[in-house]
Picture 1 (spheres, one colour):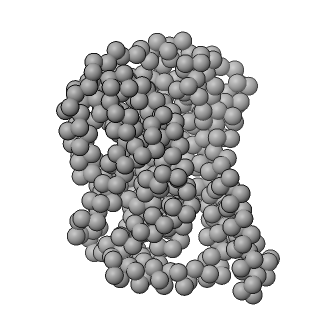
Picture 2: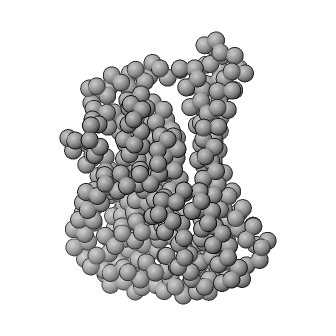
Picture 3: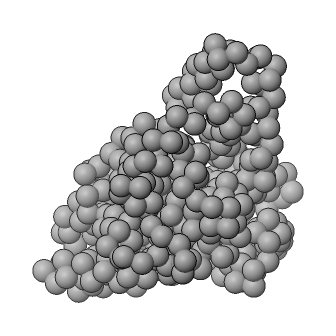
Length: 410
C-alpha cells in the first residue's frame, strides 16, 4: 500500500515538475541522481537482511533470547522487560525482530504475572527502539549516517550521550511502576524450545568489530562469513540451504521456535529498499528543481521562533503522521530541515534526526514503526503512550538549554 502511495506521489511530483517547465528527461535524471546518492545505504540494508537471516540460522539470536529470558524476576519485571528488549534490539538492530522474539517472550511472561498489557507493551516498545535508534546494525542509524554524510560510530557515541538521562529516567519510571508487585512467574524454558532446533552459538562477531570501529559493511560481511561457517559446522546445513536462507530468510522446523525466530533474508528488506529508492527520487527531484524552497523558508521562520531542535521535532511529527513510516519520516525531515544547519554541523543534524524522526515515527498509532511491533507482541496500540523512552529523549533535549555540541544552538 505504502509503495503504491509513494509511486503515486512520484507521478504527481513529475507532473508538477513538468508544469514548472522542466523536461521529463531532466526530472528522471534528477530522480536517478537521488537514487545514486542512496546506493551505499541500499547495499548496507541488503547486507543487514542477509546477516539477520544467518544469525537466526546459526543459533546466535536463539542464544541471545534464551539467555536473556532467564533473567526475569517478579519484583523488577517491568524494568527487566525494558532492559532485555534493549539488549536484544542493540544486538540485532531491529525493532521488528526484537518484538517478534524477546518482545513476544516478554509479553507472555508479563501476562502470566498479571501485568497490564499497556504497561508491559510500552516497556517492550521502548526497549525495541533503544537498539533501533543506536545499534551499529540498525537500518535507521545507517540511513541517518548516509543522508547526513556522517560517521556511524561517531553518531552512536553522540546518541548514547543524549540517551543517558532518558534511559535512567525510563528505568526509574518502570521500576517505580513495578513496585506494585507482580505474580511469581513460572519461567518457560525457552532454551529447551531452541535446543530442539539449534546448537546455540555465542558468536556475535559484528559487535566486537563495531567497537573497533571497523567499517560497518566489512564487519557485517565478516559476520555473515562466520555465520556460514557456524551453520555448516554446528547446524549441519547444506550450501543450497544456506543460499536459500540468505535470500528468503530462516524458517524453523519446530512450530514453537518458528513463532520466535523465523525471518530475515534479502527479500525481507525489499519493502524498505523500495521505500528508500522511492524517497530518494523525491529528494533528487526536490533538490534539482528547488520545489521545496518555499517550504524550507517557512521552516527557517519557524525555527527562529521555536529554536532549531523544536522545529525539527515539529517537522518529525508532521512527516511521521503523513508518511506513516520511519524511513519516510527520516528522509522528509532531513530534506526539509537541512537548511537549518551549516555544513560543519552534520553531526548535530544526525543526532537531531535520531532524537526526533526516528523515535517520533514510532509514537504515531497509524505509523508502521509503532503499529507493527505493537501488533506483533499482542499489545493494544495505545501501549505507545507507555513507551516512555521514545518521548523522554526529545523532551529531555528540549528541556536542556544548551546543545550537546559546543558552539551549536538548538
